[in-house]
Length: 210
Image 1: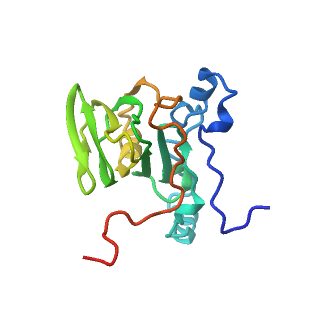
Image 2: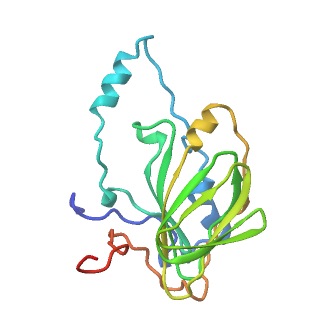
């Protein structure tokens, strides 16, 4: 029996998914969901008393271990906060981890996004232009940009925390977004055998302090 303190099982693509066809793997990706909640509904009386009381009762701290990574085996996501959780309406916060030699899906959307690089080295391709990054950098994905993220290292993973106002843009009916190439569902030679780091690690600061 799973205890309260145990990390949730990762539902991403792993060695247990090898029996699935490529199409079945793609269908199981987060971006393939047919019932994703981009903006949650708000109902009630004009004063929205019940909704305000509900919001004030929602926990303000979430434990990372309570949110499992999804997808893989190259690009993994841990969606900390999004409208379906019932606490925010205007932004989406998630952690991305890229296996060695990995790439993300290629896609575009109206909303902007900011990536704070926690560890690793990599690069972006934005509208055909390459931008290199490393730990400590902030990457900006501008409006209406077709983009893709890459881990430049063949040995080490890379991590980024992402915040974006996608829900607000969609609420304003700025609905255009398109996936050009889906997340890869097969390993690269470098990502073979890689396991996403479920536990949070302090890789930004030297041991013993500065």
